[in-house]
Amino acid sequence: MDKLLSNGSIVGSLPEDYVFPPELRPGNLKIPFGSNIPVIDLHEANHEAKSNTIQKIINASEEFGFFQVINHGISLNLMSEVRGVLKELFEMPAEEKQKLCSNDPSKTCKMFTSSVNYATEKVHLWRDNFRHPCHPLEQWQHLWPQNPTRYRECVGLFSVEVKKLASRILSLIGEGLGLKCGYFDNDVSGSVLLSINHYPPCPEPSLTLGITKHSDPNLITILLQDHVCGLQVLKDGNWIAVEPIPNAFVVNVGYQLQIISNGKLRSAEHRVVTNSHESRTSAAFLVGPTNDCLIEPAQALIDEHHPAIFRSFKYKEFLYCYGAKLDDVGKVLKSFETHKN
Ligand SMILES: O=C(O)CCC(=O)C(=O)O
Ligand SMILES: [Fe+2]
Image (cartoon, rainbow, N blue to C red; front, side, top):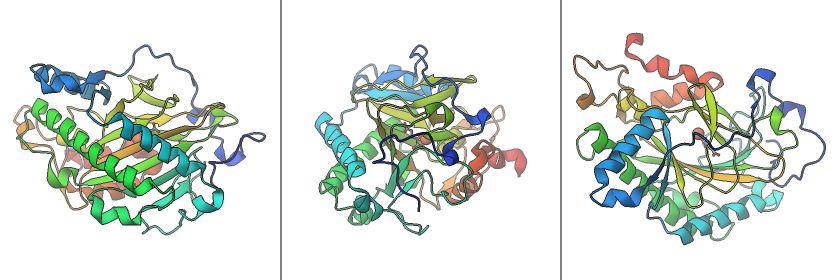
């Protein structure tokens, strides 16, 4: 395991093994917030404006695969406490963080630099990551760190709230797609992986990336970002920046939602760029199916004019493929299309 990046202040230039080949470098680092992703006021979903809100969510998920939610009902105090705890986590002394690192692939709760493929990847990512499952809480919470001391309690409370928010958004999406009530309950959204990213200031942001272009493998992702820019979404061949909005969550469609919606909703590709002056921390809650859950396009969306464009599979088969093709995840979805049967 290489040394974690987190506490490093910028010294000299970017190490060579973080330098991407020219065609994969970020290019435009500062993109104006012109054509930004839609912002949806969830408070409106409690009123007669509900069908309007549903339509906005469906439109955003079709067009961008991304939107932000405000007035989502999660306590602002809790959000701010969680931000504090995550900051504390990455600011811990190196020896303390090293205790959370492991090369054991079976370990579900661990910290690492770049990616789990550090030893074999061609270029490293400019980030540290700490991840662990969150749901059901009683199964995982005792495996989380005891330092920072408030970590288990704070992140526990927060993950339960975020799971409820994800269920609420999924239920609005289900209604918008015309699926039967409760379609996304239980196993289809039965797992939650919390993936916390910390991107320290980088000496050469134009040569490297915090995370390379990818779509998320799961169903839906709820992301808490801080005030620092970095997340970009690919739309019609152009990168657009996701503006940090205080106390909003960024929501994005994962591959499983694209498949279940039979291609109606799209899992947009996104990446993270770094900057030279401030660190950035984000917490992504990847809500997805349980490993043995059967995934297929929803029957309600298939008829003679709309044949299924994806085959049925167990989620673990998808994850295996996603993991194996990390160099070119764009190809993953292809192997689940019906004509490949
Ligand atoms: O850091 C971010 O804003 C995005 C992280 C992300 O895309 C991921 O964890 O899958
Ligand atoms: Fe992502």
